[in-house]
Structure formats: structure tokens, C-alpha cells
Length: 160
Image (tube, rainbow, N blue to C red; front, top):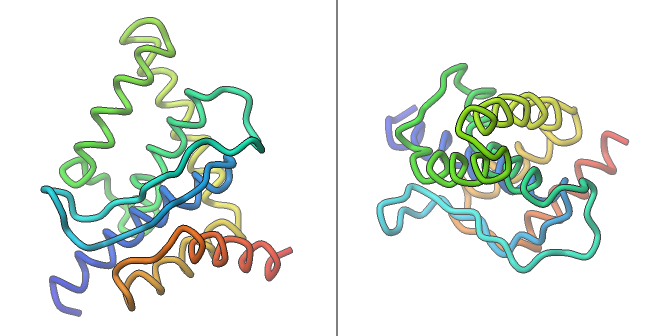
């Protein structure tokens, strides 16, 4: 496997992790891409908030979505790559500190939410959805939110 293909694969897992966590918490994914733009290797964009939400706390939902990329990447490689997740980490710290009320409380919240994100992505159907989205991203580089939702729903049907 070439170095570029490996980087694309890791980026695809990262962005797919964001997309699947967003779909789990009821967010609407607009698009997912592994085409580098504006200093970022990939992107997962959201539309406005859905009325249907699984979790009560908006900040915690946002933290889960932000952590989805790193969690998926860690599940793939076994390593934390903070370099590629710089934007995610900056926003994560802001949201967690605001939600927790202090830096220390925010860090504890991040640890708790990382465990929750890992648990959610570890569910067989959710991880299968990540893999389906990755396959599509590696083939097309950019997919619609509709395609991401299709892969998510397909995985849920297949695993049960």
C-alpha cells in the first residue's frame, strides 16, 4: 500500500467516524470528503439540527461528533494522531470547557465522552457503517450526506 493510499484510508476513517457519530446523535450530514482543502485533509459537514435527537445534551452531542474522527482513527491504527485532528481538538476544548465550566471539568468531560464515543463506534452495526462510508470515500473521495445516511441505515439493517 502506498503512503498516499494509507493517508487517504486514515483520513477516510477519521471523517467516517465523525459522520457515523453525527448520524447516531440525530444530526444531518451534508457531505463527507477526503479531498484536502484549506489545510485540512478531509471534512465532514453538517446541515442544521434535526428535530429527532437521541441524546439530551447538545454540547455532549457536539463532543461525540468531534471525537468520532479520532476514535475511528485510533480503532484503525491503534494510535492517537493529534496532528491531523488539530481543528477537532481546538473546538473540542472550547466546547468541553464551556460545558464543564472550567478547564479541569472540561477535560474530565472529554475523557467521559471519548469513552462513550468509543463504545458507540464499537457497536458492530456502527463500525460496519464506518467501513461502508470508508469504502465509498476511497472510491469517490467525496460523498453526499444522503450516501452516508444510506450506508448507516444499510449497516443497521444488516446487523440488526
